[in-house]
Length: 200
Image (cartoon, rainbow, N blue to C red):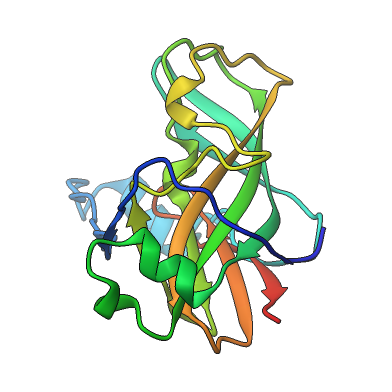
């Protein structure tokens, strides 16, 4: 579905604007540099798994997420982005001056459990989702409604079996004059998959 302009409901009367930063961590490489396996790997490097890249409207990405009780493979597709008005953004935050010239963008993302154990206590799949505008990351809006029409609260999903799908939403603040909005989703330490939506 294309991008829609719609009124955005809020759970709390005032949400908090926060910019989340993604930490880039590297694991310790404790392999013996002189071991035969290490030398062989240098000569014949194993190909890196490919992930990330731009996807077309309705096209899904597949990736694994470390869940409790084990890794789950999901199909992920950004369905649409609802972009609000400057007035709605001002009403949504405790400090309206900080969002002058900004609007709310609510990304609707569908996640389908493809393989792995059934989940019984929530999921972390939505943690890999962010919203960008004209190539710049937006600011996440904490406390904004994630249960707008067509959206579910990820923390209310207590049972999730293979083959089942859920739509979770992420609310970000972006510049009102942005030409395009992008929804990014990535596996941990993976390159993002990107869906682009026109703004306006």
